[in-house]
Image (cartoon, rainbow over all chains, first blue to last red; front, side, top):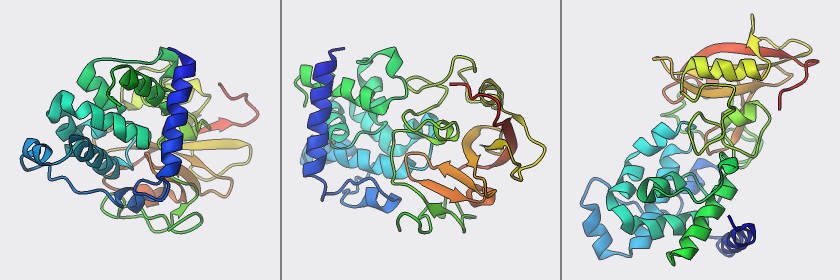
Length: 148
Length: 150
């Protein structure tokens, strides 16, 4: 892993977060995570919704809803069983740029979806549990693949 | 809601929560297990890509969590009341015995918890009983003169 590139990617993420500091996603109480998220009806035809709207925005909104639904849970099994997470996985590879955009905006454990969608693990074993390093690895991966 | 104020936890998940106070901003960097052992830099769970000490089995069972506690120097406590010279950790499990949560005791006898990817709260044990975390399995203690295992 190129640490300098990872650091640049993280700096970029932090810079974007500062720019968006007055926007939708803030760290704070549960209700803050819900602010600004446009509800995606995962029970309807998700592919039709994506066709009508920007793919990235739909996925970013799904990630926000996933985070709000699972914010009080530690067990990844509940995270990956959540309907919003399953909807992201159901979209398939087209969801990858949106998930990358979501973690660039606000790091979260939705990185699990990237592993499930790609089979990749772009970080070292000693990063286990360290969200910033894991997100940094994915942002470098996404940049390399020109998906960011 | 905010720091020092009543925690805004979802009443459907925590219907018994009446005394919990918010004590931090929300963060996904660490979880309740890490927090109980004083680590605010990593998410601990017995599954990759999370951190989990190799001394404990990588499975979501009471046995694995008790192995982790034993590795860290904790043994079952006879009481959930605070005792001088001891630090206590409470393990929560669902009705079917699946570990969900750990809380760390404060000197006052109240408890401190990290709530998933959400905030830290100061609370009574019963505040967190309910459908999200289940109930109390056991309380464990470590004598503070004993060196902490890194």
